[in-house]
Length: 166
Image (cartoon, rainbow, N blue to C red; front, side):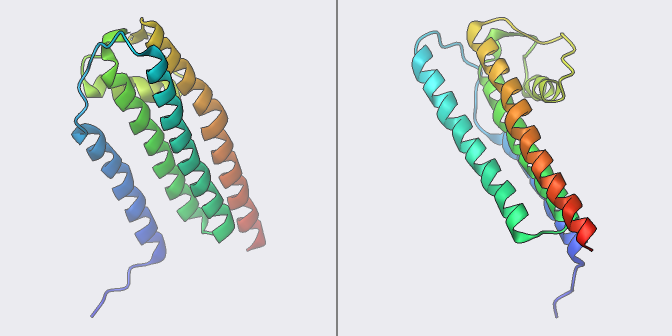
């Protein structure tokens, strides 16, 4: 006999699992800090391709939300999952490139720097000192400003419209 779980509880449970699943993946992915001085162009191409893939996933999820007419709770839960993906993506890059930062020694440091950059706080305790680190940090700031805020605005506007219809 199956137990019926209210939709809202299931949605928030899935968002909670996705968020903490992202954290588990972040700490489990076998990435080691490295200091690679060669291959600047190749690293740039790989960063662009990876960021393009993340952008495509975020746009697809945003389109799904607006097309399928999900509940506002589902939209917010999906937004949390999307932001989690961006945080994990950049934190892994920062950790891998930690030699180019003053203050990143652990994965938690990289995660902290990613969130402070995403939130535009920038306490100044972690600083990109290498050129590649500054490029990645600049790309994250622009990505956050353009892609993440645009998707959040679109989804929240859609949610407001759905709420007005009810």
